[in-house]
Amino acid sequence: MKRISTCLLTLLASLFGWAGNVEVDGIYYELNYPEKTASVTYNMVVSGNYETYSGDVVIPEKITYNGDEFVVTEIGPQAFLTSKNLTSVVIPETVTRIQANAFGRCTGLTSIDIPNSVKKFGGFVFSGCTKLKTVHLGNGIKELGGRIFQGCTKLESINLPEGLEAIDDFAFEVCRSLPSIEIPSTVSQIASGVFRACDALVTMRVSPDNPWFDSREDCNAIIKTATNELVAGCHTTVIPNTVTSIGEMAFKEIRGQGSLTIPGNVKSIGYSAFSQTTISDLTLCEGVKTIDNYAFYNNDAMISVSLPSTLTSIGEYGFDDCMHLNEVKAYMPEPFSLIGTVFGRNAGTCVLYVPQGTRDAYIECGWNENLFGGGIVEMDDETGISSAAGTDVLRSSVRKVIESNRVTIVTPDNRKYSTSGREIK
Image 1 (cartoon, one colour):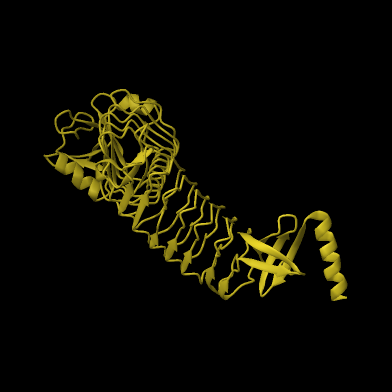
Image 2 (cartoon, one colour):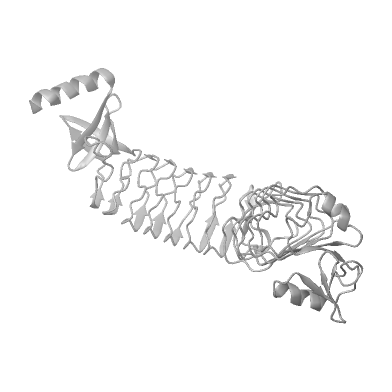
């Protein structure tokens, strides 16, 4: 019966050009008969049986099946997926492609050496390999697929070889132990969110020979040379004066920042650029014009924000879910319309400070006490913080009120006022 099955498989293979899920020396393959090539796969006999391999696996360059020889040229989709007891893999020089999720969630894998023959990766190839520490990439790699190293939280060392051309979206997402990255001269495409939540990054450098990207002034960031857009940064980044925009998700979930000043040469801040970071005090210098959706969303450390007079818009959820935000200084002489979700959830006692004589205009444009539970206070031209209903207030007094989360303003003669200007007896 086994001989008949084998003959039938061979007949079908000759007719249709393939044979699926054959086993040779403990490794499963899909065979391409016309080209005499083999792709490593998993045991498909049992439905969903991805956890096929364990221990140390050595993939051969060639296999023989039913008298025919096949060259192993590919590691197929999900081939080693969730093989948590897999400890090492030797990949031969005949392999040219590693498909999507090939080693996904192989939580026992600590290192991998990719030969020079491999030209391309699919997405999610090593996603969730939580013990993977070191990766050596051969010099044949042209593209890193999306989320290829996503969730490799122990990754400490990886080389990006000369010849690499593209890094797809979220390639190193949540690689929380990666301390440094070097972008070679050949990389011309870097997608958004590539280094999202890479908390340990302190060094980001681009080869000085790269014509598309740079790390000018040793800024520890990746900048698109032609447009002066900062596309990726870390908590040690110093934004150069030549940068004109912050790209989407450039600093997303990079924790470790304290206070941050964004220089006025930066005109726009992109989608989710600083969301879920740890900025405590944010100052946007004169010159900044636009803030995109979710730019500073869910920042659990932010307590104060200073908005310049040049600002013309803040996108939806720009500062939403900043639960400790208790002070916003808005210097725009003519406020723009504010969407209610921009400052949706904050400390609840957040005070909005606005220029003299503009309080009513801000309220009409949606900057109201539904968003700023601490009230709206007009600022004095000299001190920067001033009066409620014309009562002069020392800056130090207001500071004390804010820090104690109270919603009253104390004047130098110890009179008390609500932030709307009503005297409290």
